[in-house]
Length: 254
Length: 257
Image (cartoon, rainbow over all chains, first blue to last red; front, side, top):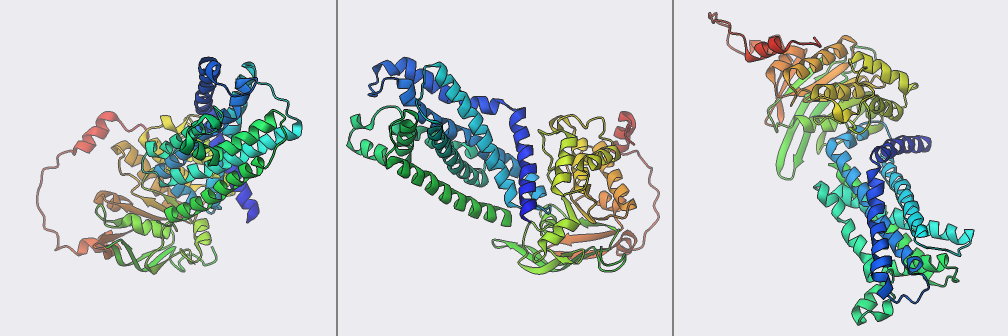
């Protein structure tokens, strides 16, 4: 049955990628906000921010990449919600297919769409002067972390999409995710923040992930923060995946 | 297809019960649908027609009782039931972003038919959708959507088709299109269970009619049998006025008839 599972997932992936390619605006809107942040922070606020690094755009990019993912996954919740509302889910579920392939197709679509958005954002950052001394191995590690982070947030989006009662509700969950990088080391070093805020910033997932990505991209030897970053990604992924499975089962059990 | 025609019923429902919180929707439903027949399940809104359909289509578990499709139990052998049955739900389940043809090919792939593309073309032809095949379904009319929806249910030639209120929300023309599609199905020997709240629809299409009321099937029989339940007919002379529907159809002209 595993060959069917892969075949069914591929078929459904093809379907939802076609949705993305027929509304490319979803990729563009995903990339527009992070790019706007990039422009705003580099050219407007950047001069007044002391990041302690030579190039603020290089300092800023890792956080912007996470914001890109956080805004991109909301489309997964949105598409999932529409499928459920339109009755397509019921059709799929009454057919002899592997049920989990319905969710996996949406998750893999999110991965592809977000990677495209990320490439767009990196391209714009490069035009703005982003330079990296990362080796191919470092880039591979960066890609790995971004993929894990995307999967983790996508499974969160699946939970949101499955439990939402309206289209607006389906995508609203991503707002706090987009805001989280602001209270982290993504835009400014955490040492200037007052006590409790600083404590929060230093112990929330975004800071360790941003620091790990930044060190990889700037060729700084990575320390233990990469393990903390990976632990956060894998931990969120595992919890979100489990909750999504439970929500899904409850949802289709009626 | 192991049992021959006329053997076990295509659908057999026994003692089906289902409650939602403290609302008893089904209270011991018994229903048989013979192979190759059209059975209409008639009931008012909220009578529980959709609940029965969802249980038969493996989308919902009953609290008690059994439902078997082509000899397979809907709970313990859900996989085999899904191979045998196809559901056209109350809400049209088509992908609006894809074209009509892509929708059919998608279902063909998921049902693992040998040649999804040829299957799609044959169904487009059969449901007069060939001209619209390359258009996104979002641009289709209600009747066209419903026809595509039913066509999608026929991919892979399932033995049993379940149609849940197939004509609700359609204009008279769309409704006639769907009726023709259902009659064509029956002519091919497919078993059809359809639910409806329109008495005339049951009368026009079904071999047998089951009336669901108060969570149970209170009457089950052919139209002739059902008519016998009423006092004998008396002859009255009434001037036959055309119905508004007949006027509407005459004025608009049924292009697809």
